[in-house]
Length: 112
Length: 112
Image (cartoon, rainbow over all chains, first blue to last red; front, side, top):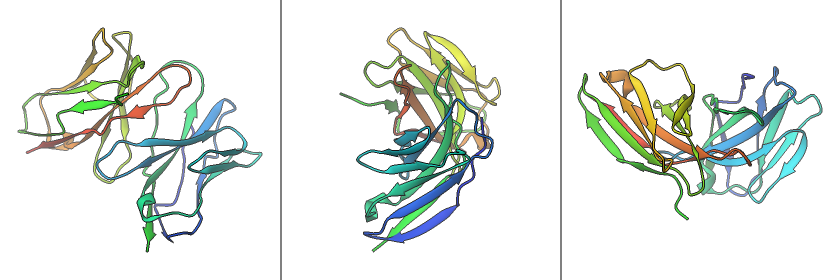
């Protein structure tokens, strides 16, 4: 699976939009980009998944350029409760035994 | 609908002992994966169980073993505990389609 690189940490203020960029230069044709959120002492929670262009759900948006070598998770109007670690993963969409390979993630701290 | 549940929440063991952790998957899910998360790191894949068999394994020694029962619940066993086995152990359940792993809250294992 392609290796991902993302910033170790980011700070933001309440009400701002936060963009976390992840690079995955060796992404394969059948790979998807998936983001998880994790609060302290809890399991990761699925946020969003995409293959190309833009995906939006009630929580976030995911922007993927045409070359798919990077992706940006966008969190609109963050609040203090969005303080968490965010993981960018490259995942297989087909085939059995689709293990998840996590990196170290990005620690997002939302300040009042 | 109960999500993924894990027991116990916390556990303290002595080096050399053996431990068993338990996981009940989300209702309707038939696949269980186990992950180890050391402090400050992302989760690392241990193995995955499907139809009561180990389907894929990560880079963990044979001291780590597991089992899946007919009701899809699962156990993770670790023998000859080492100090380095201290971590948060996460269980995740899933189905084939749509593929998304749901994580439990984890079991915090401390080896002294």
